[in-house]
Image 1 (cartoon, helix red, strand yellow):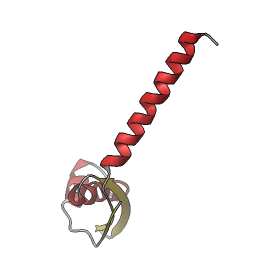
Image 2 (cartoon, rainbow, N blue to C red):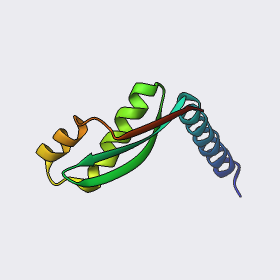
Image 3 (cartoon, one colour):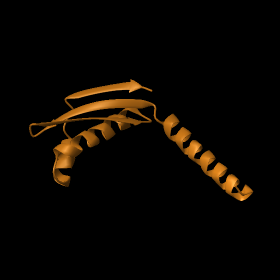
Image 4 (cartoon, rainbow, N blue to C red):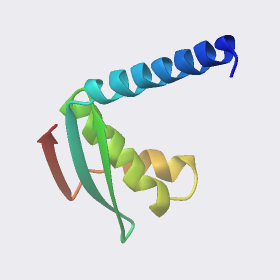
Length: 89
């Protein structure tokens, strides 16, 4: 292989490793949330830098498959979760 090709591949690998490292180190909490909306239940897990953000993202994800349309999605996201479990990563 040419030297320039090796340098390019090396730079891409280093950049990818940096992105992976920075993404994984910023995730401090992991939360699993269950939501019941209009008789349907959804459960999802999300991780984020804060417990509040992880809970909010998990609830939004849990509401996705059990709602239809933006109005229901917003209403579901404003519903209190039926179960929340968080842990520190």
